[in-house]
Length: 135
Image (cartoon, rainbow, N blue to C red):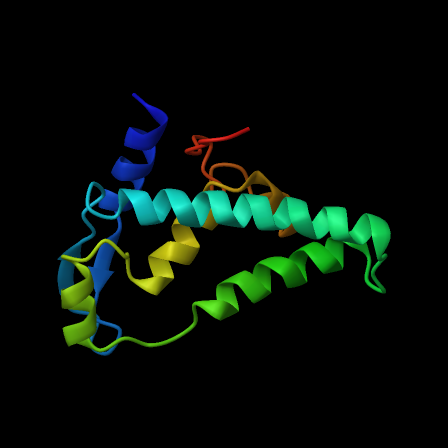
């Protein structure tokens, strides 16, 4: 299985439910959203590395653990919103996955996130098999 296929399969398994009623609306198209999903995963990893490079020149008032947690919380917060059913249905045929899955997918593949939040091995947010495009 290719690295890109891993991401496509991962996102295709995300079930989209109404954020109002909980009703099933469908599944994300892993193929259609592949480019955006790869960009989200790569962007998160790259920005985390850049953050740590920044800290070498400008040390933080926070511990590394607290700073890393704040970094990931800020990433997730930037996507925080509640979508209407109409918007979620539209996103099922759009290259951009719904926001919650842009966060979940990228974080599931991120070992640094799992370390920072001490996610148990093989848990939902720390699966043993991660889709890693770049080491």
